[in-house]
Every structure is written in C-alpha cells, then in structure tokens.
Image 1 (cartoon, one colour):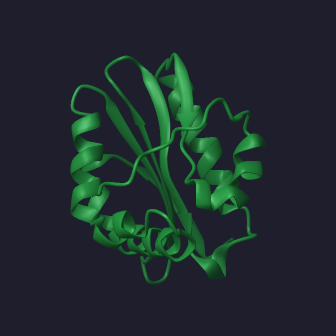
Image 2: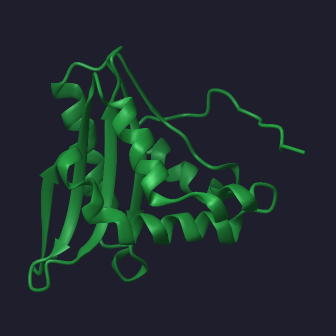
Length: 155
C-alpha cells in the first residue's frame, strides 16, 4: 500500500477515471447475456453526462487510488448526492492487480463518511444482475437487497 495514494476529488476530475470505467463497462459486457447491447453502446461520455446531470443540484465525490510513481489511477469510487439528499455509490472499480489489498474497503469507507458528513437521508447502490458476486461486498457496509428492477428489452 505504500506505493499508492488515495485522492479525494469531485466532478471536475471525472475524466481522470475514464480508462478504469471503460474496464468496468467491459467487465459488465463480458458478464451480461441479456443486456449486452446496452454495455456495447454505453460510452464514458454518456455515463459522465448522466452523473453530472444527477449532481447538477447535488454533489459528487470521487475517491481515486493512484500509483505514487506513475500517477496512474488503479481504483476509483464515484458517489453522488442528488437534490433530495439521497446518496448513491454510483460506480466502483479496482484494477485486477490491485484487488484483495483493501482498496475497495478504503474507498467505500471514504464514500460513506462523505455521505454522512453531507447529511444524506438515504444511501443506495445498484448492482447489475449479472454481477451478483459483489453483493456480499456491499452487504459488509450495511447495504441489502430491497427490490429487483426489471427492464424490457427494446424490440
């Protein structure tokens, strides 16, 4: 962990995590069977627009784990608060070589602390149905399944 640093920033640095977000999107594409077209066509620009729109009257926190030497990001967590003071863990990704080193835990703790400081009224996270292996990770932080949202595929 000594060669890494955690930086906390906001919407202005959203583009910094683009390469990692694209790996996350590829991960979802590889897992998905029903909504493959969604992930195949989903771009970082579209995701960034959605996040920025959501936080226009709210706020955004981005925790980034960077390699001290190269400055390259190896993990991130994007958390938003909307105008109704509802917080959401929107996106989290740890590069494969850095998993199992506690970075996900560190980023989650920082995001939850930020939401608490901001006085959120509700905290949530959405998990792709094809990505069920991460459910137990979120349960460690007090997130539990409440409902299942189903979408109809366009004809």
